[in-house]
Image 1 (cartoon, one colour):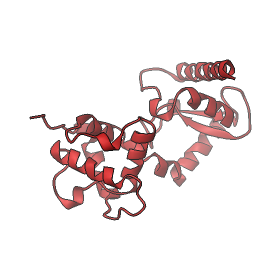
Image 2 (tube, rainbow, N blue to C red):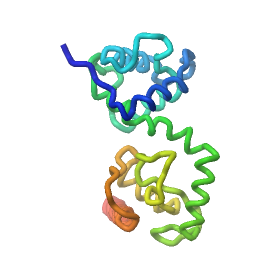
Image 3 (cartoon, rainbow, N blue to C red):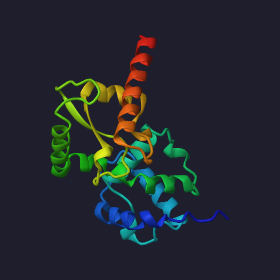
Length: 201
C-alpha cells in the first residue's frame, strides 16, 4: 500500500486557510470541475484533507490550479492515478501561484508596484525605456511580502522577452544572491531571448 502524502508543516496553515477562503459547492462555469473531484479524492487518500464536506477544495481558485497544471505543466487530468502523491505536493507548493491572479489585481499590489517603479527611477532597469513599465517578480516565494530584491522594473518589451525564455512557472529559485546578481541574470536572459528569436526569424 502506498504511504500517504504528508503535508509539509510550513504549508499546513496556509493550506487550511486557502481551503476555507475558497470553499464553494458551486461548480458552475468551472473548466476542470471533474478534475477538482479527482483532486479531492487524491487528497483524502493521501491524508492531506479529512473526509468532511467543508474540506472539499472546490471553487475558482482550484480551477486556476488545474489550468496551470494542464496548460503550463502538461498534465493530462484524465490520466491522474488515484495515488498520485506528486499532484498533492505540487498543489500545496503552488498555493501562491493559484492565488496570484487575485493578489495582482489588489489595491495592495497596485500601490506596491507604483512605489517600486518610482523607486527605480521610473525607467526600465534593462533598456532605460520610460514607457509601459511593469513590476517583475524575480520569483514568487515571497508573493505578497516581496523584498526589494524580489522586484524589478521592466518595460513591456523586456518583460515579454524575459518570459519568452523563462515562463512564470519556471522562475529562478530563491537563493542568497543580491540585486546585482539578479539583474544580471535578467539582462542575460533577455539577451538570450533576442538571439533565439533572431535565429528562428
